[in-house]
Image 1 (cartoon, one colour):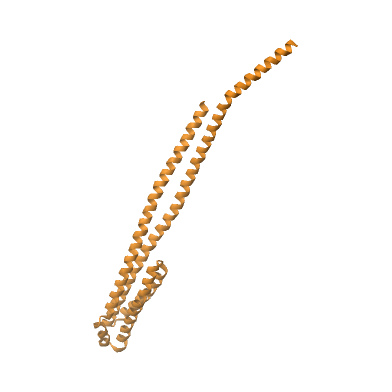
Image 2 (tube, rainbow, N blue to C red):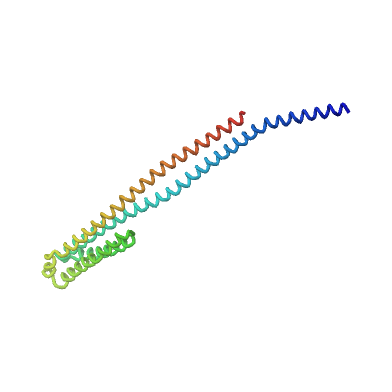
Length: 239
C-alpha cells in the first residue's frame, strides 16, 4: 500500500510537471502560430498586389493601344482631307488646261480626277467618326457638288460651243472662288482634327505615365513584401 502511495505521488508530480511545461510551451506555440499566419497574410498580400498591378497594367495598356489607334486614325483622316483639296485643285487645273487647249489628254485627266474626288468623299464618309466633323462634311458636300458641276459645264461648253464661250465662264472666277471656299472649309475641319489629335496624343501620354508610375510602384512594393516574407521564413527556420 505504501508503494502504491509513492507511485501515485510520483505520477501526480510528473503530471504537474507536464502541465507546467505545457503552460510554458503554449504561449510560444501561439506566438509561432500567429507569426505563421502573419507570414501567410503577407505573402498573400504581396501576390494579390502583383496580380493587381498585372491587371492594372493590362487594362491601361489596352486603353493606350485604343488611344494610339485613335491618334493614327485622326492622322489618316487629316491626310484624307488634305488630299481632297489637292484633288479639287487638280480638277480646276485640268479643266483650265482643256478649256485653253482642247487637248484630249487634259479631258482624260479631268475625268480621272473627278472620279478620284468621288472616291475621296466616300473614304472620308467612312473615316469621319466625330459628330462635329460629320456635320462639317455634310456642309462641305454641296460646295463640292457645285464645284464639280461648274467644271463639267465648262468642259461641255468647250466641247459644244468652242473656246470663246468657255473663256467667258473662266473670266467670272466662279470656279476659283468655289475652290477657295472648299479650301477654307477644309482648313476649319483640319483645325478641328488637329485639336482632336492633340487631345488624344496628350491622353496617350498621361496614360503611359500613369502605367509607368503605378506599375513601378506596385511592383516594387510587391517585391519588398516578398523579400520581407522570405527573410522572416529564414529567421523562423533558424530559431
